Length: 337
Image (cartoon, rainbow, N blue to C red; front, side, top):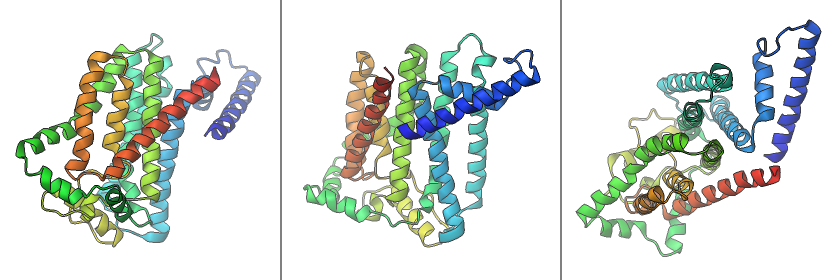
């Protein structure tokens, strides 16, 4: 990515110089007023900090991966794709484009900074890209669920037995279920709070972490896909959404029109673990937020395995992705200094 960054910077610098020269030759009186979109984008990119560039790369590369998945399916595998999914993708891309243009011209529209609005829009851009991830189910590669399940067994974890014992305690199931569901609320409240109360650099690093972990997770899912633990585990205690996810993946890869809609998408690495861990890490210096988050997300981590949503190795994979993203983003800042 560092080489890619240098190449893009060189191109953008050359583009900026060429356009500036052209504007001077034309005799443009006020270059700030008559800037083209390409000029503005070139200047914005060159002035961007490492977190902003990483976010941009991850969003673009994620879109390219999804485009590749769609094109490969169209010319080779020909799995079933529901027409409604195209409409969803087009609507999401249009929304993404509108937000991206707003972000690009933000400083022009609001000379006096409105940091929370800007950062929320950038975060939405990254999140909207994640909403398109379902197209990666068209991967031509076979699922790796058997390997993940057997890895858990090799380290002494029989998930069927553990789930069977856990579900004997009704109130524990409800309690851990609430912890698992809490991530949705966290993703709504915590980023916005971060953007309002924290410094911009801290917020931009969080968005870069978020964009990078999402991109890595999507790449892993496409090249090492999973149908979900429900494709391996006994169904006695699993909910319909879990069972349907495995069936939906199977039907798509058999060229059958899906008759069900599953809950969730990616098993390995666990995005519940990725996002919960990242949010907890982000608020590590705000103790009044960090300690409650640590308790809730520790329960959430356990719930992903105990409720049958993920294999244990999915948890390890999620932690590894977050650790790498934090190391990589922070390293770019150390290089800059």
